[in-house]
Image (tube, rainbow, N blue to C red):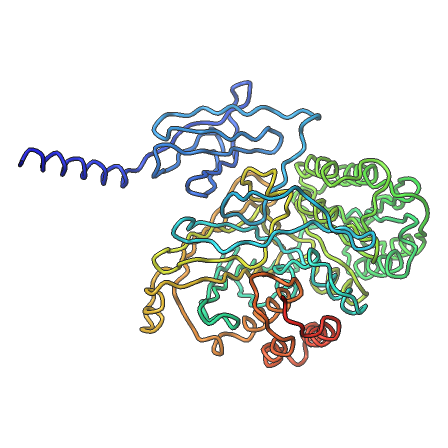
Length: 586
């Protein structure tokens, strides 16, 4: 009897010891010629975490809880590999260089938690406008999937595009509504990073105004502001669409006025070139010093619209010119301004993706400015901006042009970090489930992707606000009631600087710092109202019925009296109510 019990105890001990075991997965990544490949991205499926190979040797070491796991290894210019590994065995991975025939980059995710089985990509068109079909992030069981991640992009095009639809008295296509862009348009909750830090990360836990059983967790990432006296010289290539489709007041004339505003702030150390495409591609203005503002302004004013849209060849010429006038340590950037209607040469998102993906390796950034209505190719401009290591803005009027090109110049054109993303690991003893609001993925990425997260560019002085809707456990409810503090989530901000392959990280611990909703900062309450506005416009399945007036009542006390954009938001709520009415979703 004693012998049997001893065997049972030994088996239990072995099982417990196995479940608590840790393994150290080590190895190296090489090319086909046995040369080490540094900075390869290694996604560990079991842990839902990203690691990188070392900068000199291409080697890596990863602590694992599983004896077996799978990895996805990717690096620009090489074919992505997904492999099954035994974590206590030395691993050698050889990546194959991609040739022109299969060098198209895989579509990447802007948020990631787990694999999903989705329908194939389908674009939604409004007139001749095209948008990627988006899939809302789901409610995730924190015990099963504690780790999630999202891209820290600072695109703001969605809000001004939504504003354009509403001001015209039209309903907004649901896939044109990107909640994170709606919220971050206002740059709410900016906190200056301390000392030499490049970023400030803060979090706040509060009640959820549309569901009393849930909580909201705000994650706020603020980037350091560049001292204007130390702004590096700019090498800007304006790539301007002057095709026939641009011959409307809200297209080429608006762009001309916008660029003229930008030019008036140039310095002698800045360089401007202009490439145009319409009928054919030409260098409209050779590289010119910023001190020759009169010459540049006259060149812009003389632009006229005509012809087809050879966008592909124009992009190639603009990048060639940017590389010819490249300023080491400067801000080298192509600024593409168009309605996105490329109809000559390569025109698909995937083909344009391939072109831009190759050019990003040169250190030249890409900013896309969209204009127009009825013909806007939002999906193409998103693709170009993301794969060009840049950002995307939509100009619906001259005030928006001034905001993007003058008032928020450093946010738009001066990046402090690239390929930035946040990993969040929730404490499942406090969080039962969570849902990342916004940062929704394209269906195409969900179908074809192997869990690759696309980092974003962060401009000087910009702020990225992410909001999680979480279901608390009984433990968290008790902690909040007793005003005690515990770890709610571990966070890691990962980024690179100036397109370099050296990767940096910043660790942050989010605590259960609960404050009643009425007591949180006005900017966070306004961000909540904007989120509710966006979810109601989208007719989100995760948002219950709330009237337009209730959203306005929440926003109104938080709006700054002298802030034009915030007051304009209140008017948009009124206009949306007239367009949509107050019908409950069936």
